[in-house]
Amino acid sequence: MTTQTAASKAPVEDFDAVIVGAGMVGTALAGLLAKAGMRVALVEAKASPLQLSAFGGHAPAPRVSALTPVSQRLLTHLGAWPAMEATRVTPYRYMQVWDADGSGSIDFSSDEAGAPVLGHIVENDVTLAALNEQVLHLPGVSPLFGSRIQALQTTDTGRWLVLEDGRQLHTPLLVAADGARSALRELAGIEVAEEAMEQDALVTTVLCEKTHGATARQAFIAGSPLAFLPLTVKGDDRYCSIVWSTTPDHATSLASLSREALGDALGSAFSHRLGEVTVVDSAHRFPLVQRHAAHYVQPNLALVGDAAHSIHPLAGQGVNLGFMDAAVLAEEVITAWQRGAPWGALTTLTRYERRRRFDNSAMLGLMKGFKVLFGSHVPVLTLARNIGMSGMNQLVPLKRVIMRQATGERGRLPLSCR
Image 1 (tube, helix red, strand yellow):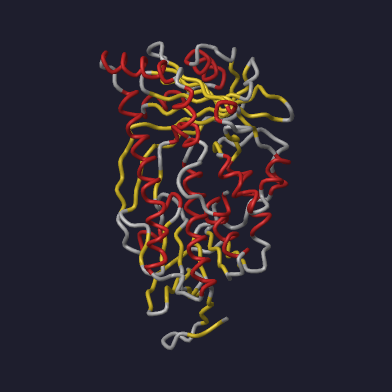
Image 2 (image 1 turned 180 degrees about the vertical axis):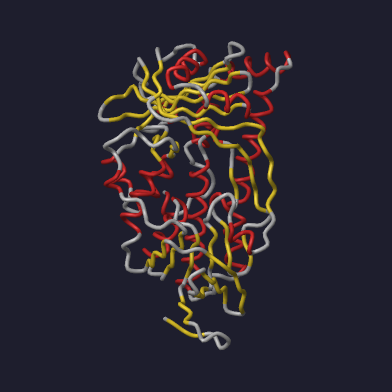
């Protein structure tokens, strides 16, 4: 439906929902709403969507996520998982975590968790391209790529979003899914608490001498977590994605090394558990900042994913939290829409915030706690964490509880994730 404003006479396009940001979380949310029958505009500054055909035939992209079984269910519900599986996903059934400064270690297995896998390591681009393939062609979705927002207006009936090309979109529900530095969040005047983690993440892809054995490994080296995340490329299971969260100076030094020297540094830091390490891609680094919005919602507006919260990559939970935001928001909105209730009203959106804020806050707090605990060089804390890790490794029931949390089995799951 198209209307006109009295002041400008410019056409205004009406949608049941407008989502700004066509990343993994925003695209998943668009799919959930459209599958229920809602008309959704998906606004994205990038010129064109990723195509799945571009992946799988070359070395993995450097940015990956550890997708939980709960996120896998959501992606299956949206039809994206089979295409991802046919392109490149790597299941992991084991996790090993140890303190390189001591003797503490803990191991997890899918058998102990009572699940086929603990999760899958997947390139972010593969996940997004598969979502694009399934969502952008749905009858209810209007993809608006190459579109930047210019202004935000509030009316009695919802929100008007003004784009740089002059287009105006009117909706009872506007969603910010445009990342940690959300422009829409800023336009809405929602404050955000930021905490620099005093670390940079160095990411790259390596080929190891030994196979990864479907195991995600993480060592704490002087308080800096170094993860070797399993990847399988064309049947070769010696690849790993590297995430080393370390001091900015150290990350800068590492990024300046030749590939050969960086491989030597990674192998040595990891005590050569996977043998010699060969770097097969450029090294990228980015500063780590945890953010949490003061509010997730306003009348007719909601934040999801990194626009609401961004987290240390230590536990690989960032996109999983975002997918859960999308699933819960969709469930609350669709329920109201199907009942004929105002789906963009604060009463509806507050139910979404109430269901998600505690879980997100708990995970943000946990990551901060881990950084403090493993970043300390006080002897008594070093001893305590090593004893604690090794002691917990013997307590299978407790480990089972932790694994259920890590695999996303927390609280009341939305129907799309069960």
